[in-house]
Length: 178
Image 1 (tube, one colour):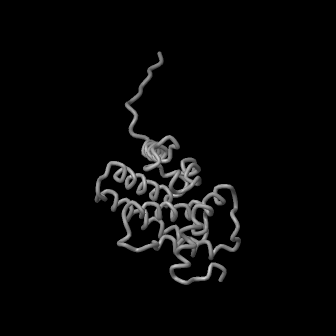
Image 2: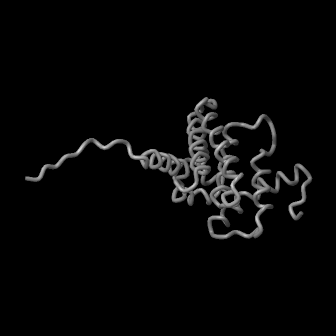
Image 3: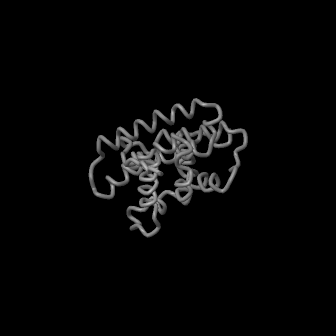
């Protein structure tokens, strides 16, 4: 006699990642009204992020923060404590990744910096023209031995990042070639 036993499955670790992925995909859908569409406003690199989620915690937490900030923006709400907490946690996680010799130059870590730059757009930056994330991205690019993109994702990321980095360098009279 075969006895089948089963229990109600508990929440899988993947469920929160799937929820995050679905929320992010909703924010970058090309059919979303242009006033609220992240893909249109910030670049085509965003469409490559869902497949990278779950492989880099800095990117995961940055996407969580920007998705929460974007949802509040779309509904006209002011910045919530939840958004600020997620943004703060994303920054702390990013700091750990930037201190790691291999992760600091990884594409997904640079992407996390870019996503936090987008997030700061929704949160505000106390009247500053350019954020510190643009400086961080410029530093990551400068620290890399090979400045060229390693793949198509990095090419899209560099294309989207160029405005922020060039704006930062011009504002602070920094040479892009040094």
